[in-house]
Length: 207
Image (cartoon, rainbow, N blue to C red; front, side, top):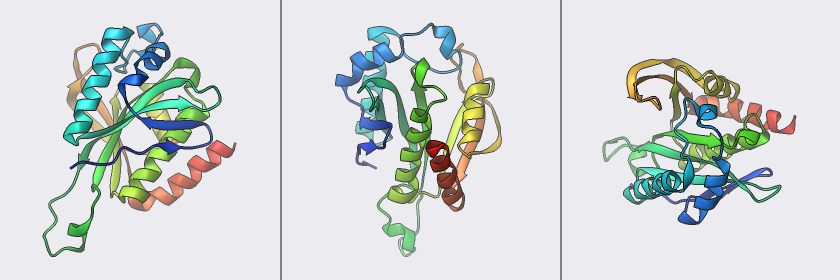
């Protein structure tokens, strides 16, 4: 399923379709001690960032991801990256009203990282608001899920703050950054919860 790669713009950040022209900005944004990103797969240096971008672009060509570079509007700097992935369309019967849907039924938001100074800032809140609005109101998905390393308390707390509901732990779910089988904490937002989540995200931005 091929999906458009939109520009998602707010008052603090603009999410731009990821391109190779973003490599330099991402190198600078990720230029921190690896220990700062202990549980997140953040590329370091030109080689890793180039590989990271090329892999994301290949997934976009395959129709399995929609990756973005995050640009801070106040200074036009690239401050991180994020993407939609595990984009799924369910096999509705041909005579079902949902069979005519053009968008996916569900997706995951992940591969999200920000430069150190942007963490716990309006940038992260607004980026999530922009992506969730596109998913629930553009694609009209039934749910959006998130997974993070179960040991990553910073990420888990951030997901709680945006209104995602904890579903449980998936054991040995993915390869962790320390090359161990990773237990993943799963969170999600479903369509009926979206209006309340949207109000809370807007409230946080206004505050």
